[in-house]
Structure formats: structure tokens, C-alpha cells
Image (cartoon, rainbow over all chains, first blue to last red; front, side, top):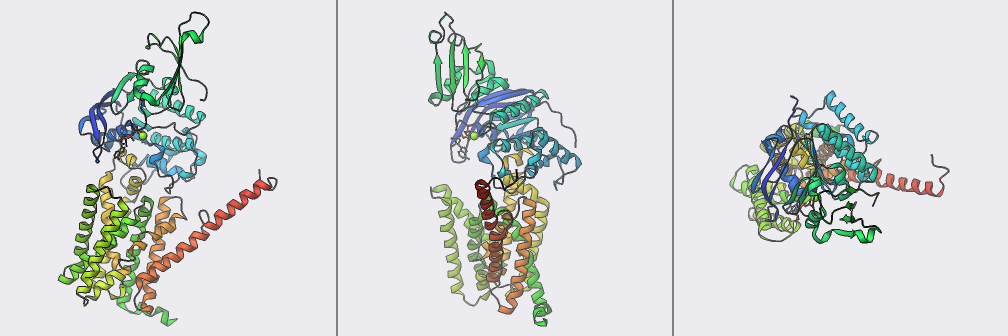
Length: 295
Length: 292
Ligand SMILES: Nc1ncnc2c1ncn2[C@@H]1O[C@H](COP(=O)(O)OP(=O)(O)O)[C@@H](O)[C@H]1O
Ligand SMILES: [Mg+2]
């Protein structure tokens, strides 16, 4: 099979997505992403993150607007095997009789003929992907017999083996320990440097400025999208999370004895909090952010 | 000894045993998927909804597969309609529809008690099946078998992770429809061996048993198929001596295998689990004895 070297891009153009039961989960949503990007997708539960993924994969057809992948319609792009998907943990049947190795091999199916018989290269790619996520020793385990972080790494390995150029990750950090989280972030950065495009749904507000160059804020529609530095502001986050978010601000007066006006903000939706320390009272643009140690 | 080989001296017996074994094997292959998706009840509903169609077909002398197909379709449509128009839960709808259809089927049978064949459809008797019906069974089993050989991995991925299946270009809608088509066809074919009341066993028990033995889907399917074919073979064979009751014998054999596996399976069996718990608690009490 040919080596697909597409320039991975993603364009979501004014889509509205309605489920069969009449529930409109997303309306009038638009944003665009370029190659070599890690983009955070942020929103409360039920804001439509998973729905957005499903429409990017053509699983649900928007009733209005369109999704374009590398300049192609979704179905054409899927045929070329350029999209890979790391599912939310709840969406996987962990009792399914498959071994870790089998799951990762599923990433290669798109590269095989219709009988799906793996050749040497497929096996090598699976071994390599498992190695990369540090799961080699677990390759013969049934997938239910893994910890939360290990489970995530298996599916990450699958998307590596698939050689997808556009990678969709649905909450890859939920239920994952800090060490694994950092390892996953490193891997994602590595894949970004190879020119891939990643869209990551996450509640880990604190880590986003560290590894996501772009951010899309979602609440049934796109509230803001663009470079993380521009979008990821307390004001926008307030808008995204409404009352759900807990937000503490210590003003300059409380924080300092001198006349330093900088204040400290801690924003959390119950996973890792975002800590902002800077001139955000006046201008949020240049807020410096700092990840704290484990929440 | 000679008595034991007696069934094989009859041509009709050889055909019946072959057909029962084959359809039992293919149903077992399908059962590997069905029990994983929690769709067992749908299979049961399907088999019961078919009965009035089969009864009607025998009454007017049409091929029974056609009648089965139509009443199956009608039942699915009725379920879909009620689901769309009410807030009733799925299990209630399934229960409602399949008992209604089954009742209608029994009623039709009582109207024309001469059609013995209909009794066979409800209770199953492979020994009473005509050559023509045997041919239909083998044809259905053969086609389903070949289709599964070519698509089993794609169906597995579709059922395991539909989103991923789509990203690798698999047409998941088509495969799901294909699966249900095979399931319906094989359910209809298996009616002749075990009857409408028990066909659910053929499409659940072998897979459920294999599930306790295997951690990989491919292995599970093979083990399930072996269980399905061996029990169907002996079920048909034994029913020669007992004159009928094929369905009861096959399903009882499958249940027997299930019970043995349930207790003695090396990893997921009850005894293995007890032993592991005991080992673990001994280790807790006396850490010095257990390695590391
Ligand atoms: N299959 C479905 N049918 C109907 N509504 C759905 C379906 N899946 C999700 N929804 C609804 O769509 C909304 C968005 O859900 P989802 O995309 O899963 O949110 P998130 O992933 O951000 O938590 C929710 O209100 C949810 O109830
Ligand atoms: Mg979700």
C-alpha cells in the first residue's frame, strides 16, 4: 500500500449535530486546525465533546455544516486510514475477550487486506507501539486486567500502530496517574513534532498550557478557539464552565505586602486545577500559568 | 457395539446428523458475538416471532424460509414502531412482541393440527425433516459459514469498538445488518433441529461456555464452534434411539458442558477462583511461605 503523507488538517465548518431522539448536542460549531498541533477540547460533561469526535469520524452526520479532513470529506479520509481514535474508557467493553496485543493489532487492520492477516511489518509495528508506551510486558493480558493508566496506553499504542495523522483522544487522562499522564504528554508532543494533528478532550485544565498549543472551548457550540495563550483565559473558562467550575482568586493585596498587583487564580473542575499567577486582573492575554504539583 | 453404529446405516440419519452438526456449528460461531453484545434476548425474540410465518407457509404450501423471513421482519418492524412511539423499555417491548407472535403461531397450529411439521418447528425433530428442508438448512449454514470466515475479524472490531472500526474504513452499518441477517437465517434453519423454544440455547450457550475458557476472540469462536458441533452431533445421534426430542438432547448436552466448564475452567471457573482467593488469604496470613 502507498505511504500516505497527507498534510493533516481539520476543518469543522458550522456544524449542527442532532441525535435520533431529537436532542441537538452541538450547534453552529466551527474551528480549524493545522498540521503539527495538539489542541485541547475543553467543556463540561455533556457539552458535546464525544459527539464532536463522533461527527469528525462520520459516525453521526451533522444536519448542517461539514467536517473536512485534509481537504477531504470524512468518508474519503477514513478510507485512507488517516484518522485514529482513542476512546473514552466508559465506551470500551473491558470484558471483551481480547488481549492487549490484539487491540493494538486492530490498529493495523486498515493496512491489511480484507482477511486481516498480519504480516511481519504489522507485527513489528505492534511490538514497536507497545514498546513506545511501555506496555510490552503486558501484551498477553486480557484488557480488563489492567489499571486505568495501562488501559489508556494500550489504546494510545493502537493509534500509534495505525499511523494515523489525525488523532482524536477522548479524555486520555481520566483515571490516569501523574507519571503516566506525563508519559502520554511526552508521546503526544513527539507525535506533534512529526507533523501530526491531535485533538484531546480533557478535564485536566492545569496541564493544557503545558502541552496544548491550541484550545477549543465547547459548550454545545464553540465558545472560543485558537492559540492556547489567547483562548485559555479565566474569563473564557468561566464562560465555558459556568457554575460548575470552582474558581478562587487571591488579589494582589492579599497576596503581597509590596505593591505588586499580580493576583493568583486557581481554577478547577475537580481534576488537576489551573493556577494563574500574573497580571490577569487587567489583561488576561499574558497570563503566565503554572502547573502545580499533584492536586 | 453394532447397535451403536446402527444410526449410520440409514441414509436419512447420516443426512440429519450432518445437517444438525453443521447448523449447530454455525449457530455457535454466531453465539460468540451475541452474548458479548448482550443481545441474547433479541435472538430469543427472533426465534419465537418466526413461528406464525412458518405455520402460514406450511398451510399454503410455500417454502417455510419465506414465511419465517416475513414474520421475522414484521416482528422487528412492530418492535421498532412501538419503541419509536412510546417510552416503554426495550425488554418490555421485546417480551410483548415475541409472545404475541408466538401465541399467534400456536393458534394457527391448533387451527390445522394435521400439519405435523409445525409441531416440529416448535419442538424440533431433525429426524422428521424432509430432504428438501435438509437441503435448505445445509445451504443456509454453508453460506453463513463462508461469510463468517471472510468477515469474522471485521465484525469483531465493529462490535468491540465501532468508532475505531469506522476509522479503518470498515462499513459498520453494513456489517451489523449482515450479522443480523446471518443470525436470522441460521435461527430459522436451526428451528428444524431444536425447535423455536430452544433455539436460543444454540445461539447463546456455546459462546457463553467458551467465554469462560478463552481470553482471545479467535480462540473463543473456535472453542464455541467445537462445543456447538459436537453437542449437535451427539444430540441428533442420540435422538435416533429416543425417537425425536433432538432439541432437548442437544441443549441438555450444551448445558452439561457449560456446568462442567463453570466449575472447572482453569482461569474463570468457580473452583479456580476459590483456590486463588484461598492462596491469597494464606499469603496474607503467612507471607513467609509464598514466594517473593
Ligand atoms: N446516542 C445518543 N443519543 C442521544 N443523545 C446523546 C447520545 N449520546 C450523547 N447524547 C447527548 O448529547 C450530549 C453531549 O454528550 P457527549 O458528546 O457525550 O458529551 P461529553 O463527551 O462532552 O461529556 C449530552 O446531553 C448527551 O446526553
Ligand atoms: Mg465524553
